Length: 198
Image 1 (tube, rainbow, N blue to C red):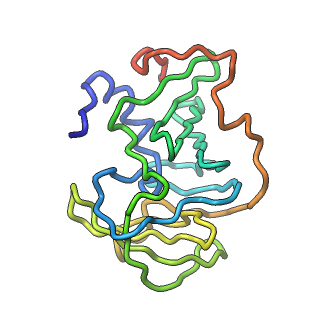
Image 2 (tube, helix red, strand yellow):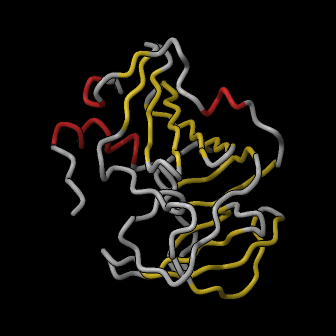
């Protein structure tokens, strides 16, 4: 059973983590019929996210996503590792890093039988993508994700939802600096509730 975040952690993370694309950070209890594609190439994208007034930069390299989320006047990079099932927040101004509490970022794991139904083809930001539909076990609500042939999640939301909760507005497939997807060696790793996220 997923452990609930204690109230103090929840208050500290509600603003920051509510902005993470639901398409990428799906509920780990979702019931699927086949593995759902994940990104296979390096890329950088500008994305529009529900509740976030400005575009969010999303990068991918070797199975790790980097989201540069803004909270107040600060940018907090978050490293989401699909295989390790972890999400690590970096506070670059303080050289600190902390892993989000269990359950805060249930991440789809590569190769897991996620079994979403493939529907029709579509386009998003000039990219061809295939719509995959699945039902979230927790909410019992249908969700649709449009995914490119190389696994890039271009759009996510409820069927017919406009605007969607998450969508890519520009995309560039380009090699990424691997160092952007690692915890810098000079950073101190601290308990998550000790991160200064204000």
